[in-house]
Amino acid sequence: MPRACHPVHLGEPAPEPVPVAGCDVCQALAEQRARAYAVGDRSKATDCNVEMRRHAHPQVVRG
Image (cartoon, rainbow, N blue to C red; front, side):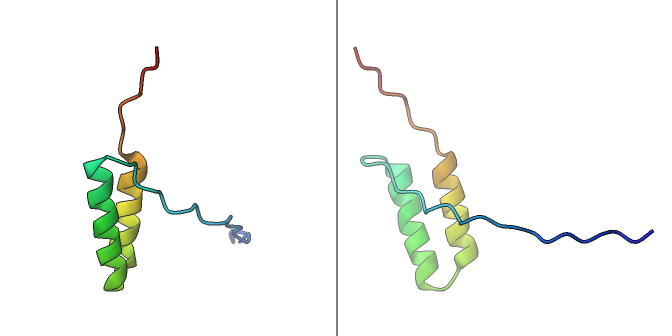
C-alpha cells in the first residue's frame, strides 16, 4: 500500500541564544560559535547554540 506524502510546514527558526552576562560557559560557547561561522561550519555553530540553550544557570533567590 503506498504511503501518502504530506507537505512539511516549518516555522521560523528560533533566534540564536544570547550568552548570559558573567557566565564563562556561555561566553566560551559564543566564541566557539563565532569561530565556527567564520570558517563556514554551520553544524558546529548550531551545536554551540544547542549547548547554550541547554546550559543551566543557578536561580537567583531574591529575598
